[in-house]
Image (spheres, rainbow, N blue to C red):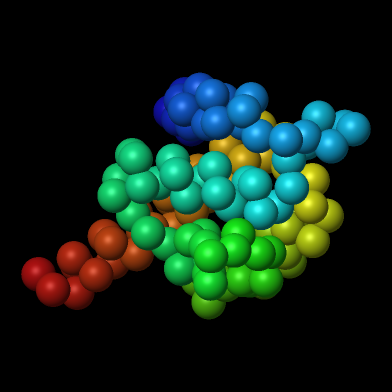
Length: 117
C-alpha cells in the first residue's frame, strides 16, 4: 500500500516537477519543492499547511520542517531539515516528503477524532 501511494504521489507531482527550473543535477530548489508540494496538497485535499505556503509573497526556505517540527521525532526532523538545507530535491524526494506529511496529518486527525468521541 505504501509503495502504491508513493507511486501515486510521484505521478501527481511529475507534471509540476517537469515544469520547474532544475540545477545541473536535475533537482529543484527547496523553495520550488515547497511550491510543488503546496500545490499538490491544495489540489488534492484543500490543505494550506503552515511552512509550505508562501510567506510575504516568497517561497523562502526558512520555515522549519514544513511546519511539522513539533510533530516529528528528532531524527526525522533532522533529516528533513538537512534535505531542505541542501536545496536539492528530486521527484522521488518530493513524493517521500509529501507522503510523510500526509501520514502525519492523517495520524493527527485520527488522534483528534478519538479524543472527541
